[in-house]
Length: 385
Image (cartoon, rainbow, N blue to C red):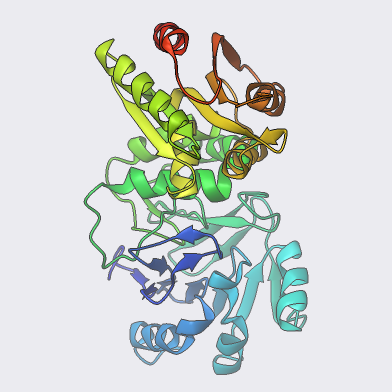
């Protein structure tokens, strides 16, 4: 695939993987992207996962058409992008390795070699001349590892963005829901903790004329770039992307679930533009996390469990707080047959989240819903709207 006249795609699709990074369900597989810039000198942009080294090297050889590469640029050291550095160095021993200083330390840790004889350390603003193409390096620490650099091709106005602007899904898979759906789940699952660092990166990107974004996962972005940049601005600033209410719950014997169903019904009756309901014991947890960051209002409903809260709810709140959850309105529903503690525990786990408010009405169910609870749910629905 040609990105521009001189830039070609040489990545691979992975349909063997079931869990990305050991936790994210990827039913449509995963793409490991790599690119080659063909100029008087040739630069290869990153490698791929270890399971696809042979395929990647074959793709590279086909693109080279008998020529030899001069550089391998390593932007990110996660093994799904760096696993074939040694294989590349063995096949093309004359090529230099370009990366940040921290990346070379990681190479030694991962692969036992820091390439002291052939390394070029790239820092903020450094350039690499290939001929007609000039590569300018941009440091992007903690987006989402500390060694990350990105590369801007000043000639074709292409930003090689490392893991930023990536998404789940192989490139040859169907994508009926569009880029944002799986890009959002990817962002909040993997990058979401580092909003401040992404904001810093976006300020650097604003100074560049970008015609194409080439991420390490997901499709090449060449049209309507403002859409993707604006979404990253919203996500990284923890802004509200869509109006609506998310209800996340756990239920043991169905009574808490009945309360959630009633609340969802009341919200819809009152004109809520979107009500997203997630059963945390059964849904894909990263999908629920994505919803919590997408919408402006969140209702949590769970049972008291061992004087705490149900484990799936505790895990969910931990996912939110470790990613910097903030700027939302939260409603609480608790169920406790003899000593309800769930609302107190949930409130305590979330009270330090910045710019967060709690609804005045807390629904307290003692085993099964009664008429008083129904009135509380009516009032909570009004408050959340």
